[in-house]
Image (cartoon, rainbow, N blue to C red; front, top):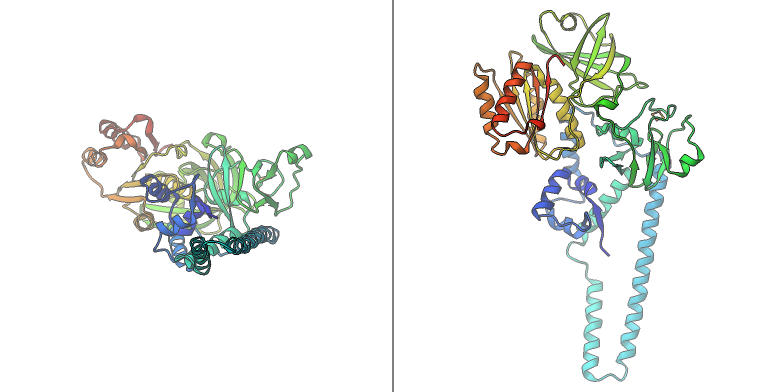
Length: 486
Ligand code: FES
């Protein structure tokens, strides 16, 4: 009996991205059967992976988590009801496997008896043939296949993953992610940067209502919002209150930049990170009860003691309660002056937003070039982290054209490049001859027409970059830009 595994779970087992596996499938290095990978094929394609040791998988996950500035989460067990339901499913699998083995055992006994029956009074030639068949069966029954130990270890790992996490596919968008530990479906979606509709996140408003298409879920938080019997009958669930028992498919709306309303909330300063005299980051912690919905690349208005300014968000929507904005120390910017002079941890900060439509085209399968001019790195950083959490792009190249503030997060960019196969980082020092530099960058991509280009900087820089890139083959429609003032 063949053992088939879905691609997302294989990606987890071997510590590779789905993109890498899809590349292997395209090149013929990994065979699929109805979109699934057979266990034997997996063992063949990844002979170097030690299935009984998940250290490599954990190492890769930790590097990625650190590179994304994301908290490395403790291994948390699922909610006890979910755990019981998953163990019950596993028990059922085990019982069916036992029943099947029993059945095969009976078939073998029957076959043995049949051979005895046929052997009675058989010719010497038939006797010899029956003897060979019996010897063949006994030999193969007694002998384990050469990769049996590896296959067993792999199945153990996969079963462990199934207990600790469940796979969710969102329709019609096709987003997919794992719900781990005691997360709800909504929490896991947000952690993966999937912008599902929601409001209160605690079972009151009904905004996270969605439809379960297949699989099983369990309610893990009580909710005051009442689902009507007809809605329940049709499979309605509240994403903030339910966790999946097994792999599920859910019908739900994923919001675009225009669908997310402007929100106002009162938060506190977590810290001020001064990179150098020209650039600082304001780290904000929003209340547990009121998260800010936004997409990577958008901006917010922040206000402390009546002084306010609007800045690009530099963090990923997947970062739970943390929001980062990066603020250049520009003359005449009262908020920047206050930030460098007196703002400190625990100060109250009012947040309003999100604004802007400089967001990822999540439907695009094209490789991406990011062009960050100076402090334009902030929205680009947010986009990159969002793309990483969604595992969106086939490849991402970051060109950071620094100004006087320099490459103030150079280490972070290098960590991304070290941790991810599909990410390249090219820092560029300030130059008098911007057009030549832009043309050199564009010429590095003879197939520029295949790329999406996201650029952030001043209006003048963007205009010049757009002109050079179009001249070298970029489709104007695949140019996404955010000017400093947006
Ligand atoms: S977000 Fe309000 S009920 Fe789920």
